[in-house]
Image (cartoon, rainbow, N blue to C red; front, top):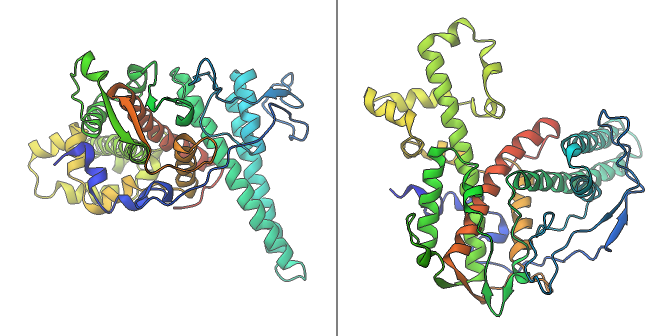
Length: 403
């Protein structure tokens, strides 16, 4: 079994792809933002950060865009393919650019305010259910929920962007601005930084995936890395999107693997029987959502396996994943929230869509190096891994929609 590409080979997993990256590919219109180069936050609500001297309001901020010109493919520190349109998205962009040290305070505050706004609108809808204004409040609640969902997706995107900035890796800008005379080249590669976010066992599967997807061995020479190949823009977009999903899956499976190790050790030491009420509090953040169904899965997997095989499954993520039944595989691979699905779709459309029309070209052939292909795949894997973390965090503050 080829572990690195089973995500692409399993037809049941293709159903988790956003609509914009499924086959057949339907034309998808992405309208670039036409916002002015400067905007002022004159209507933002007061930001409560716990720092009385910090004022995030009424601040003029330059909108960050990739520029075409002498540096055709601009990798500036705040350059991202997706241009955020919601007030919270633009606001967090300004905070990250001007007061980075307060970014997490600002993001948490935005999430709380959005959750409060949505809950207030829903509460009014229920209170007025028997009144003549019931229809009006129902419509207001629907509009507010839609507005908050779009804003939360922007907040999630900025949180992911922040994680990339922590490892000093700028996201690849719109590809249409990086292609010159039909050739795409992404420099610097940043391979080491993008690989550094993964554990050793996850990194093994990451490298297998990269090697299989782009057809380049892990120990390839420099000459091989800089050799050129042709690829359809459509195909490149599909590889990128599926790699995001694979990165998301690896993070989910790895977290489940670590949790199973904890539970196995706890069962051996008798902690679950003696301290069952406190044990969940010992689990790392994000693991509690994986607990349900895990104990029964462990019991079913352990049946018929010798101690050596069971120990090997617990030690190596690769062999652990091989033991997944279809239900467990689906649980780990499926995006948990609608917001995550929308975010992947919007990001891929912004990255691979034409700069002027927003259309995803289906017949454009791109000449690029294997090094640049590797950079894109590694970025997508990191994006998926970060998305899993951010989704877990945001859901604790703002309840996301189930996918």
